[in-house]
Amino acid sequence: MGIVNPAKLSGHLILLCSALMTGPAFAQLDLSGTWNPQYQEDQPERIPGPELVDYLGIPINAAARQWALSWDPDRLGAPEHQCQVHTAAYIYRGPLQLRIWEERDPETQELVAIRQYTSTYEQNRTIYMDGRPHPPEYAAHTWMGFSTGKWEGNILTVYTTHIKQGWHRRNGIPSSDRITLVEHFIRHDNHLTHVSVVTDPVYLTEPLIKSEDYVLNNNSGGNWLWPCEYVEELPGADRTKVPSYMPGENPFLHEFADRWRIPVDAALGGAETMYPEYSKKLKAGAK
Image 1 (cartoon, rainbow, N blue to C red):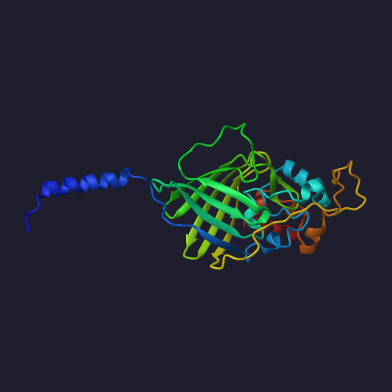
Image 2: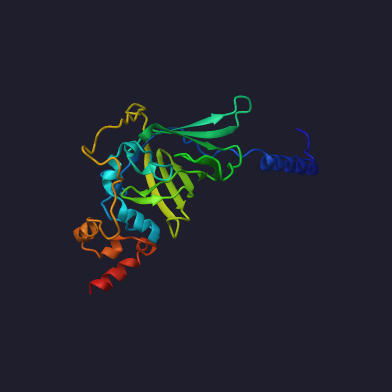
């Protein structure tokens, strides 16, 4: 065995390190598979749905609060709203099956995009991983928006713009078409955590942070279709009017607050109600 020249070996190591540092970034994990949500977190909101005039923990401003108090749940029975899709900022909260797969360049095998299919409303979403820019502000908005992603260690971070108007909570709290969405997909073996951070300059005073958990489903069967059809849910309804309440006329203003014995001001939400310190204020008020 010959003697290795230390200077030559050092040069080779430098070249190797440089190649590793300048080469393409590889995904740390593969998120591909079928994922089923776990509902132990925020179950009342995610399955039966939130109670009316329950805005606790949402950093809404006065405009969002007025919109929500004017919202009549009969609006969901109008034909044009029965099959309205939840946006990318909300759709992960509900009952669904989530399929994830990769799209790679057939020649280079570099990761071009991560694709997602959500069974609820049969939504297809593309998360571009090739460094392309977001479209200009005037580009069309869609339910899933325009998403780009990058790997930060073992965490997939996704940035989404161009999302249509939707809901921050599906009891009337609106989200505007100017929201931006930052998500983190974190996989631990067969467990997937999804964290979302929504910024809304129109209706929120602070970012809204939520999280959901999923488990890998090795049986890919199940219902993947959402055959939503318009039906007559409100017989005899006046087609010339949008179901709504005038200011001060919402009949459900006290329902949630009285049920849980909290002040109405607490039920009306706001950034203050997101933090643990708010409980001290409630206790002081009760005394």
